[in-house]
Length: 310
Ligand SMILES: NC(=O)c1ccc[n+]([C@@H]2O[C@H](COP(=O)([O-])OP(=O)(O)OC[C@H]3O[C@@H](n4cnc5c(N)ncnc54)[C@H](OP(=O)(O)O)[C@@H]3O)[C@@H](O)[C@H]2O)c1
Image (tube, rainbow, N blue to C red; front, side, top):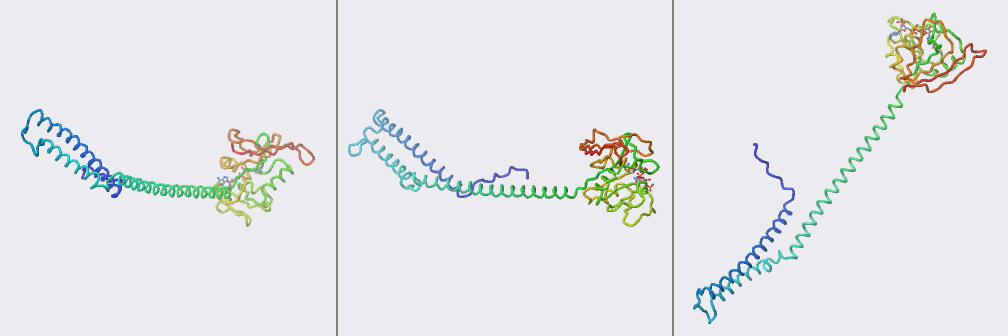
């Protein structure tokens, strides 16, 4: 159960056979070489034994010393061995070796080509997947962007941040009202119940979303009633540019949720009961500032300012 796992061969049967044959061939040649060395030593030994040590000195065949026959016999065996290696097993000669080697190289090349082809296929697949996922995320980003609704606070505030008194606006600036109309027309305008009640009637060409805690509050047809600021924003989520138009309570709650502030800064201090929250310049940066002088239609100097999140 816990024994060593048998190693799985990484080469196929044919390759194994080729390698085994090559090893066999090396062994054959080694053995032949060893035979030759032993034969040389043996021959010298036979000569010494007969001529120096005098072994079988008197034994001769056809007047020739016996060691000559011994050496000739051994030579015959060696030649037989030699022929066996280089002639009988001719198919394992140099040409055969080359042929085998070529076969081996071709086989390896084939394997390399196959691996390369597999790798290219895999790379193509990965590249395709990356392209597809990039395209998908681009499309998703484009969709998100197109669906993203910009939420803007629109307000007119005095230098002391006053915005209203007795549920009424404190000043009359016709250009400010025109700007309000041109920016908000065609969009959702989100407001508190008190601001809604400060209008003589609903403003034309805008979708009114009125926030109230009163369950039985009734409003003219077309006015959407909600019980929280979050619900109001949700109602307007498909509007590319919805506006929070006041008053003081709603501005205070909405500041952390909006993307932009369109502020008409009236350059004067007023007595008021409702105020706009201080604009935190560490969060908001001024991106536009257009000054308007006092004239017959405008009792106060004022500036149109735009703030965007830093
Ligand atoms: N200068 C400007 O640009 C500007 C713009 C707009 C308004 N204003 C002025 O601002 C004054 C009105 O502001 P305001 O602060 O008194 O009132 P508001 O913000 O317009 O409305 C307050 C009312 O909204 C409802 N409300 C607020 N928070 C709510 C929440 N979280 N959930 C549910 N309902 C909520 C409540 O209605 P219920 O009491 O019905 O529950 C609350 O009484 C007026 O003087 C107006 O002229 C000035």
